Amino acid sequence: MKLRLGIFDSGIGGFTVLNSLLNSRRDVEVIYLADLARNPYGGKSLYEIRNIAIQISNWFREKNLDALLVACNTTNACALDLLQGNLNIPCFDLIHSVSEKVSVKNIGVIATNATIESSTYKNLIERRGNGIKVYQQACPEFVTEIEKIPIDISKINYLTDIYFNPLLKNNIKEIILGCSHYPLIYETLRKKTPININIIDPSIALIEKLNNYFQPVKNFSKSDNDPNIEFFATGKIDEFSLKVTNWLKINKKISFVNLQT
Image (cartoon, rainbow, N blue to C red; front, top):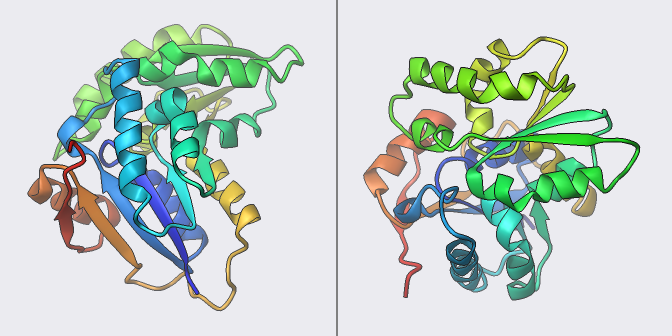
C-alpha cells in the first residue's frame, strides 16, 4: 500500500520538497495544495498566517493522510503548533529537520520576512549550544520573482547581491535556504556564494526524517514516469498548470479549492 502524503505551500516552493520526495521513493500518493490566492505568505501578519494554517489543516483533515509535509517555511515558523494540533498525524517540517543537521559555528539563514521575524531558525539552532551563531537575512522579493514565468535572472542576480552582501560579511560557513522557493534558484545562488560556503536545501533533511519514520517500500521503482500526485490550487489554475509543467516536467490536472469558507 502506498503512503498517502499531503504537501502544501503558498505556491511552487513545495516543488522542492516534492522533488526530494520523488527522488527518494515512489511508493507514495501525494496531495499537493498551492494557496496561490494568498501567495506570498512572507509579508503577512502572524494572525493571518495562523488563520491560514487552520484553514489548510481543516482541508487536509478530510484527505485520509498518513503524514503532512510542511513545505512552507513561513507557516512552519509561525503556525506549526496549529498544524500538529489540528491533524492527528505526523507532521514533518523543514525547520526542525534541518536544524538537527547543522554543525558549523557560523550559519546564515535566508528566508521571508515572517520567518526571519519569528527567529525560529535562530532559536532552534543556537539552542544546541557549542558556540553556534546564526545570522539571518530577509529576502522579501525572492518569492514573487521566483513565481514569475519566465524568471528574470538579471533581477534575481541583482537581488542576490543586495541580500547576500551583508550576510557574507559574517564569516559564515553554511547558508540555509529558509524558504522552499529558494532551492529553485540554487544555481544562481551558488554562483554568488564563495565555494567554501555550503548551501543547504532543508527539503533533503525533511525527506530523510520522513524515510526514517516510514521506511520506503523496496519494490516500488523510482523510475516511474507518472507519479501519483493530485494538485489543488486556490487560484490562478492555468498559471499554476504551466508552472507544474515547467518545473516538474509532468502534466497533471489542477483542481480548484476554496479554503476561505
